[in-house]
Image 1 (cartoon, one colour):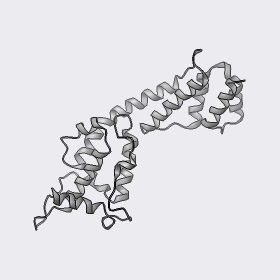
Image 2 (cartoon, rainbow, N blue to C red):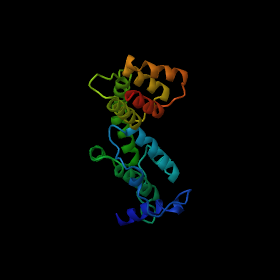
Image 3 (cartoon, rainbow, N blue to C red):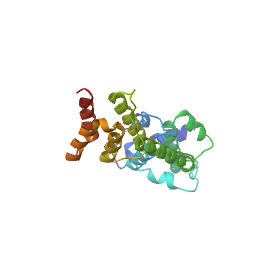
Image 4 (cartoon, one colour):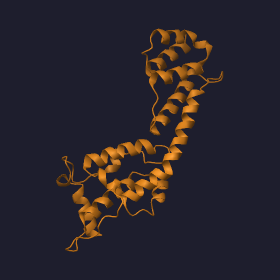
Length: 210
């Protein structure tokens, strides 16, 4: 185990990377929010970037187990490399996902298991969030501020799930949800189609206080 940890430390050092990387690398600092069922796609995209930056992108693509020892009996670098990536996956995962990964002994197994279990759930969540945005409606008991903060939260959840929505499309749904009371704001947006959500947010708040 000591040999394996030593090899893993070497792999995270500058001599084992195409870039000048620190000897001690805390991957958790790049993922302040642990990966779970709600942010899997955004985590996956960023994790792939990290692997590529460190020269380990092919580790998760291998279908065979890495050799364990070299001819001299020392830990094989490929095993250390695989365990390093596996430890990164676990270190950036939420407690529930870590439990899911317990049976996995290689990075490839963990990567495939995550894709199998989480991708369908993420797709369903994205569909639900998009539907909630498409059917936005502000009721009479809700202030414009609360309504806009709610829709911002929905967009944030959608982004966290790894999906996107064009600014103009999002604004149109939010505006429809405000109803006829904001038809003057609709006219403004029609005349200035390049207005993004942040500008729209400010305009809607101004309209509320007129």
